[in-house]
Image (cartoon, rainbow, N blue to C red):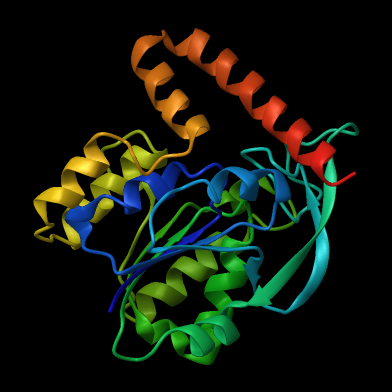
Length: 249
């Protein structure tokens, strides 16, 4: 079975790429601990999607997510973008090794994307220590620890361990795309060709799998100038977080 693990789902930026039928994924697991984000992620209309309401880590338990719902939400309070007014939420964590052993098999073809604002080193070190990383075909990792003073030193150490064990991984810096979903698409283009059914391809191209928020964001990105798009995206994101908060109070 070909499986995609989207760790740090946010509003579905990577999920939208992973659902393209040309990659041939049988299952797509989207890990997102932030409640405001899950409200949008669960709107994706594709039977392959499983939204997992936890953050992957090196332990199982509960913790504080600072900046919940924001693109840079992190379990590390010293991430540079945060200020005293940022919203926080208590979220669930699951040890990466435990989840992989319980939900995948050694015969699966697994692709892992990590963009989880500092937790990527927790996840990778845990899988390296346990050996379960052998189940992964390839890894895309955005090392956000560089934005966190208490964690920045870990990037070089983890990268060296990955190389020593012969793990295949890429970072945004090794690709030509500017980052984000474009970089994930470039990575997948290089590592996982497939021959999708015509009907699935048409449905994807028409955007019928997307929630209204994601469809509107995609259309706005095409139609608006970058500054105007950025302003609109921030406002829509804030409105979504407010609705999610209101629904739980």
